[in-house]
Every structure is written in structure tokens, then in C-alpha cells.
Image 1 (cartoon, rainbow, N blue to C red):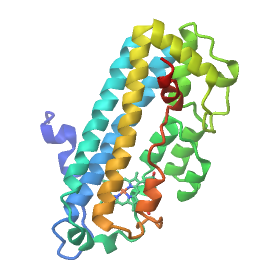
Image 2: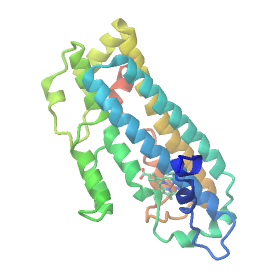
Image 3: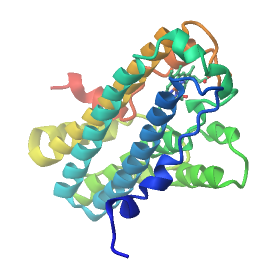
Image 4: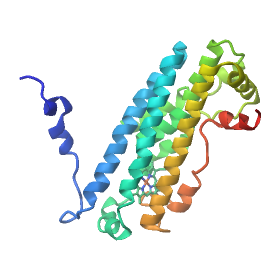
Length: 260
Ligand code: HEM
């Protein structure tokens, strides 16, 4: 049989994946499921792009690296806008099915945690939310040990002839990289003398800004939907989420901005 739109995209299988748990079911549960599933699909795509980007940095491919960064940020801008849709869900509408979520929460999104690790926000405690030995646990464990996007970028800078300290290139990848005055000096030089690599730096700042914007939009959306209630994942809810705001993933790129 020839390939059709539905067979290629597995549309029938895809449309079988939305299973509301509420009685009726409640009208608004479908929106809640579909929006989360769309996020997970985009997270899959972003992981795919960032893994490619790490390879591009390691291969010293400036142009494709920049192109890929721009694509990733365009995806994030779309993800930020999607919060608008969830904001049409009133507290009453959400309450019509919230109990059915039990302890399920975005907090448990393993792809979101993989992305955090890849960006450099390493935290071994995050693994505690997954069954040891499970596929999700193993994926996260691998990401925890692997070099981050920033490590790949530093490799790229070294490849470009910059004197990145050995201690930065061969660090313990399972830990968060501390801001580095030596790297900041290199970045200032890049901004002054290398237009294309400085554009790559700006594209990294775009992504960092988008990540922070998503968190801000998410927490405001949560506040208007559940107010000061606890999260289904067991956290304090809005209070916990506020603690995750304004934390850049590429701090060295922010530290240098007052140096020009
Ligand atoms: C009505 C909609 C939503 C509500 C009320 C909500 C609420 C919350 C709350 C209260 C938390 C804190 C953890 C907890 O105790 O559960 C949380 C975390 C989280 N949510 Fe949402 N959320 C919503 C939609 C979404 C969507 C659409 C996504 C997209 C994937 C998402 C992704 C996340 C992630 C990744 C975290 C973990 C953040 C972190 O630990 O840094 N949420 N959410």
C-alpha cells in the first residue's frame, strides 16, 4: 500500500493517545491533555536539535550551529505563546477534573529534566523522582554524566583558538559549571573581534531569555488557575515555582554585559 498522510504520520495512533480520566468526560480535560502532549512533542524536537548542536559545536561548524540555535529559540517562542491557550482555562474549569491528576505533575516530565541537564542545570537529586533502572531514570543518568551544551560551546571556542582553561574543558560534567572569569574574558574578546561567534553567543542568550520567559508565563498561569494551592506534584505550588525564576543557564554570558 502506498504511503498516505495518515499512515506516514501515524495519525490514528496519535489520536488514540488522548484519554480523559474524568466522568463524562469533563469538557476541558481534553485541552489539558493535548497541550501537555504538544509540549512533550516539542521537547522531543528540542532535545533532537540540541544533541545535533552539541555535535556541530564539537565539529566547529559555526554556520549550522547558529542556524540550529535560531530554530530552537523559534520553537521556544511558540511554546511561550501556547501558555495563552491554557490561560483560557478558568479555576472552576480546571477544578472539574484536577482530582483525577492525583500526584501527576509537570514536575515529573523527564524530557524537561533532560533539557535542564543538557542546558547545564545538573542536579542528581532530580533522579529520585524516577524508578531506578527504568528507561526514564537511565536517560536522565546519561544526561547527568554527559557534557552540557555550554561544555560543547567551550570546546568550540577552544577549537577556534581561544585559550579556554583545561579545568573548564575537563571538569566533572555531573556538576553545575561555576561562572568563570577566564571564560568571561574570552567572551568579551569574542564580542569585540568575532562577529559570527558573537552572534552565536547572542543566540544562546535568546534561548536563555526564552527559557526564563516560559517559566514566568507558566508560574503566572499557575497562579491564576490554582492560586496558593499546593501542586499535584506535592510542592508548595506557586511559591516553589517562583524560586525557579530568573536563573540563567548561561551565567557567563550575562556577567559580561556590563563590561562594554
Ligand atoms: C493548568 C495548567 C497547569 C498547572 C495548574 C500547573 C501547575 C504546576 C505546579 C503547581 C507545579 C509545581 C510542582 C507541583 O507541585 O506540581 C508545576 C511544575 C511544572 N509544570 Fe506545570 N502546570 C500546568 C501546566 C503545565 C504545562 C502545560 C506544562 C508543559 C509541559 C507544565 C510543565 C511543568 C514543569 C516542567 C514543571 C516543573 C518545573 C520545575 O520543577 O522547575 N505545566 N506545574
